[in-house]
Length: 300
Ligand code: CP
Image 1 (cartoon, rainbow, N blue to C red):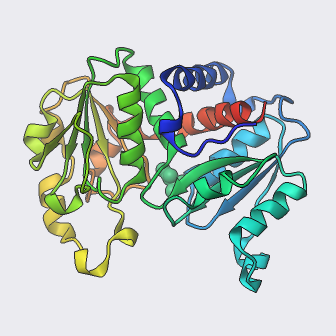
Image 2 (cartoon, rainbow, N blue to C red; image 1 turned 45 degrees about the horizontal axis):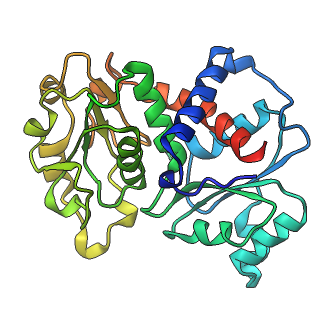
C-alpha cells in the first residue's frame, strides 16, 4: 500500500513507471477495457470541492480495474455532527476501505491524514493551492506523447500561478524530469511569493511565449483570491489570454494544454481551445489511464 500526496515524493523513475503503465493501459481500447486486478478492493471518493474531471475519472479508472467505489456524501456524513475528519478517515479504514481519493480546500490536510493511516492508501485529488499530483502526471504524459526529450523542452505556463495547485505540481514535476526551460508568465499579483531558481518569470505574454514547445494555460482561481486581491479580469484577459496571434510566437508545433475547467476567452481563446494544437481533451482522456496507473500502484 502506498500513498500519493505530493508529486515531489516521487522519483523520476517512479514517474516514468506511472506514465508507462498509463500508456500501456491506453494501448488497449480504454472505452471497453476491463480487468479484475483490483477486484475486492474498495475505493472511497471524498470530495469537499467541486470537480468534474478528477472525481469522475477516478471512478471510471477504479471501475475499469474491477474495484468497488463508494462516494459518501460528505454533507450527510457524521462530520456535520462534529466528528473530526481524521476520525472519519479512521472509520473508513476500520470498515476495510482500501484507498481514499480526497479533494479538500485546505493546503496540507491530506498529508496529515496519510500520516495517520496504516492500512488505507490516501490519494490527493487536489488540496487548496498546494498539490494536484495526478494532474501533474496527466500533463507529463500528454507532453511525453508529443515530445520525449525532456531536457530540451521549453514549457510556458500562463496565468494564475499563485493560487494554482496545478502549476505548483507541474513545475515540480517538470523539474524532476529534468526540464531546463520552465517559464511562468503572469501579472505580478498572480505570481507566488517564491519560485524555484530554475523557473524564469515573464510579465509579458509575447516574450514568454517565444519558441515554446508547450503552452499551459491556467484557470483563474477566483474562489481562492481574497476580496482585497480581486483581479481585474478584463485587464488580465487583455494582456494574458492565449489568442491565435500570441500562440504564433511559440513553435509551430507547440502543444496547448489547460487542466480545465476553462474560462473560455479569459485565459484561452475559444478557437485555440478547440483548435488543432489543443490537447485539452487528450488530457481528459489521459486522466483515466493515469488514475488507473496510480490506483494500481497504490494498491498492488
Ligand atoms: N483539472 C481538474 O482538477 O479538474 P476538475 O476540477 O474538474 O476535477
